[in-house]
Amino acid sequence: MATVATAAAAAARHNAALLVPKGDGGSLPVLDSGFFGPRVAFVPEFSPTCTQQNASVRAVMAPPQLQQQRSPASSGIVKHALTATEKILARASEKTQLVPGENVWVKADILMTHDVGAPGTIGIFKREFGKDAKVWDREKVVLIPDHYIFTADERANRNVDILREFALEQDIKYFYDIKDRSNFRANPDYKGVCHVALAQEGHCRPGEVLFGTDSHTCNAGAFGQFATGIGNTDAGFIMGTGQLLIKVPPTLRFVLDGEMPKHLLAKDLILQIIGEISVAGATYKAMEFVGSAVDKMTMEDRMTLCNMVVEAGAKNGVVPADSTTFKYLEGKTTIPYEPVSSDGAASFLQEYRFDVSKLEPVVAKPHSPDNRGLARECKDVKIDRVYIGSCTGGKTEDFLAAAQLMAISGQTVKVPTFLVPATQKVWLDLFTLPVPGAEGLTCAEVFTKAGCDTPTAPSCGACLGGPQDTYARMNEICVSTTNRNFPGRMGNKDAQIYLASPYTAAASALTGFVTDPREFLS
Image 1 (tube, rainbow, N blue to C red):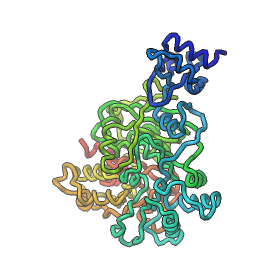
Image 2: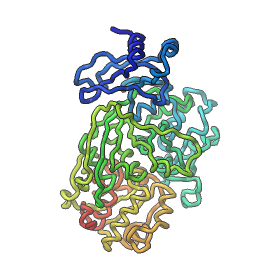
Image 3: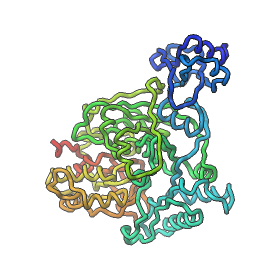
Image 4: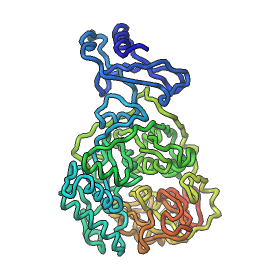
C-alpha cells in the first residue's frame, strides 16, 4: 500500500487533486482552500458502489517539510469534502477532518437544562465532581423552567426550587426564573418553552454546538447549529468539563423544492417526511434540509422542520444559515459566530427529493408520528378537542396561521380549543399583532370571536401530560399541533392524538372532525 507521504508527493508533482468517492460511483476532486488547515488525504481504491459508509478515507496533517518543498503554484489545500454537521463537529473537536462513525470529544458552546432534567443533572454533576465543584463556564449553562410550572404539585415545584438554588450557588448568568406562578407576567425573567426561548434569547448561533436535556433540542438546528438532546449523565459531565464524547452521524439530505401551496405549512412537510422514512428511518443520523422551499421559509418554519427530526430517530437536524438566519439574530446576540454549509462534493448517506407543490395536508394518526394519513381521508374521525401549542406548534406564526383560517371562515369552534403560547413573547404577540386578512383583529380577538379558550400562560402545557392539574391535560380524541402522539403522551393512555399543522388544527376545531384546511382556504 502506498504511504501518505508518497501520495502527497505525487499530488505535489502533478498539481492534482485527490479523489473521494461520490454516491453515484464517480469521483470528486477535493483540492480546496476551506477553513480547515492544510493536510493531505490518502484514498485507497474503491468500487463504483462505494459510499462514505464503506470508503476507507484517512488523513493526517501534511508534514512541514513537504509544505516547504511545494511551489506557490501547487500549494493548494487538499480537503476531504464535509457536510455541515461534520464541519461543525470538526471545529468543535479541533480536528481537521472526521468521518461518520468516528468518536470525537466535542466542546460545548451551550448546555441547556430545564426543570425536568436539571435536578438529575445537578445530582450527577455534584456526585462526580464534588459538592463544591463549579460548572465549567457559568455563561454557557442555560437554565429554563418550562415543563411543569403552573401546577400545585409539590414535587414539580421542588424541581424549580432546585434550579433556583443551583443558579444562585453557581452564579449562572442565564437562569429564566419564575417566582410568582399566579401571574406569569409578574416574572420578567420567565420565558416559557426552552427551545423557542433559546432562539428568542439569542442562544442559537450558526456553527456552534448546543446540548440540552430534552430530545427536542434539535429544534436549534434551524440556525445551522449542531443541536441534540442528551441524558442527565452526559449533561452532568458537560457541566464539569464542557466536553462530551459523541459519534459523528452520517447525513441524510432532504431537498424540498417547489412553491408551497397556501394550504400547506412546515408541519405538513415534516410529517410527510417522517411518514416516508418512518420513526426509525434516521436513527443516529443528521437530517439536512435544503432546496428552494427551505430557502423561502421563515426561521419559525425551519424550527418546525428541525424540531421533529428526533421523531424519525435523528441525532440532529440542520438548515444552512443564510440571510434569513442572520436577520433573525440581529439584536439577539453580540457573540460572533461562523456559519458553515455542506461542501458541494460532500457525501450523503441518502438524498430524498420532494416537490412540495404536489403535497397535501397530512396528519399523524394514533399512536405514532409516522402513522401518516391525508387529512381529507380522516374526515370521519370525530374529535373532542383541539390543542394549539408546544415547541413545535406554539410559536407566533403557528397562532397567526390558525387565527387566519378561523377569521376567513367566520365560524365558531365546535369543540373546546386550547391555546398555549410557547413563550411570553408569543403570548404578547397574540394580543398585539394583527392577523392578516382579519380587518386589524389580533389573534386573541379572532380566537375569542371564534369561541376558543383564552390563551393561557406560556409553558409546555399538556404536551408532556404533566400533573393532574395541568392545563388542557387530555383523555379524549384530540387534534394537536404538538410533536408526539404515543399512548399517554398528553395525559390518559387511552387518549387518541392526531398530530397536525395549525391550519388543520383550526379547521378541525371548526367542524369537530379531522378536517382538511382546504375546506376553508380555497
